[in-house]
Length: 189
Image 1 (cartoon, rainbow, N blue to C red):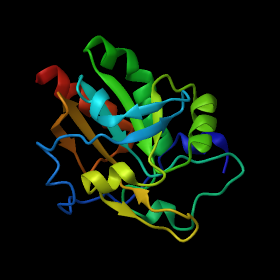
Image 2: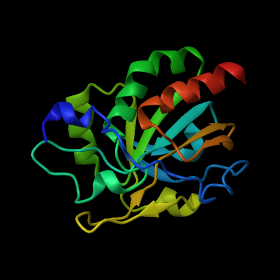
Image 3: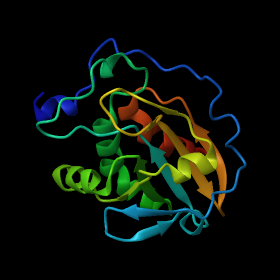
């Protein structure tokens, strides 16, 4: 797969349905879980969510020379991590102008996230939940694929203020429009 293909969403992707796996999240408080950042620091989720924060979770970004798992495009909500991440990059200034910080989160290693961040010019921090500590604390939906050694977090977005989850976006489709949907919500609230 060429690099440009990671930025394109194939037609006919299956649309994820709301299975209720995130119904418990709205109103929850963000836990004190420390995650490694692409900027080389530990980020305490509880502390950063005391301000206005957007956390978008995604399964995994592609890597040059490494094929995506078999059947990836057939898993509802799996495909589109690069377009979603780049959309947040492109709108990052708008989020900051509204007083929000943005964090991307996946269960990928920090090394993989740093490579992606540098290659894609990502301006916000990406956090590694490779041990699924935050995913478990919040009871986030995950899934597994044969070619990946750890569970992957399903695509969802949380808006937190004063450590409390104010809004949940789940399921997300299409992923490249998620940042636009979140910005629209923030402008209306």
